[in-house]
Image (tube, rainbow, N blue to C red; front, side, top):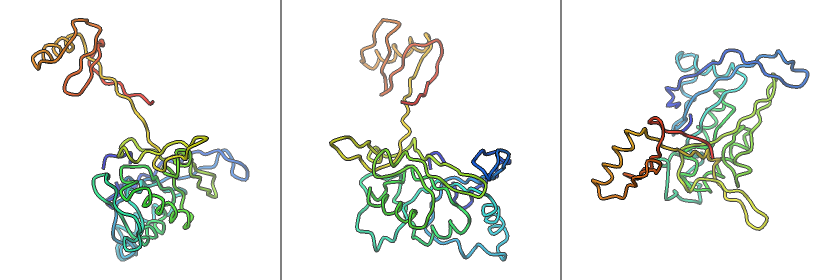
Length: 254
């Protein structure tokens, strides 16, 4: 998938070098903690049957995760039983309607995962109802998550994991998602919009003088208006290119 974070469960587990974390006593400033992280998790079958000494490859990987203080994943699916779901698939999805049973989440928690990003292109595959139902299940099981909520304030709110070696905060966000998925802020007279915490990016395309001249020539050949002003941008093939000293795309937060 294209989002910020892939457990297929051919996931690679990244074991960080010991990371120094500062926190309040009795945890001192020199306390070290270990983070494991995998990528996107999409699963519709259980893993319990693989997590035993008879399957050493899987079991050893799971033991690595269980041995860390914090274990992160990007949960790219809804979690509920379709037979008990009162909603319906959304008109837009992240490429498919991804859903797993609550037992799959139980297996992931048993493997040691305790930090779940909930902002991605599958957050609202089953609409706001599916998002909220999944978040409620995570809350009921005491699993820390971040990135989606009943308004932008809740969606951007950190999730906090308390460990014997300090507190870990998670802020979930997504740069790739359906437009309907974005959470909105609450106002004095209007409720906030449920959804995900969107990472909003602006891209400015710049072209060198030679590139701008070539684009003007192509634009005119296509019957488009292209100004002779060397400082004017050119819009062609749905993209606006502004004059610059070199060819580049500048991406910035907005």
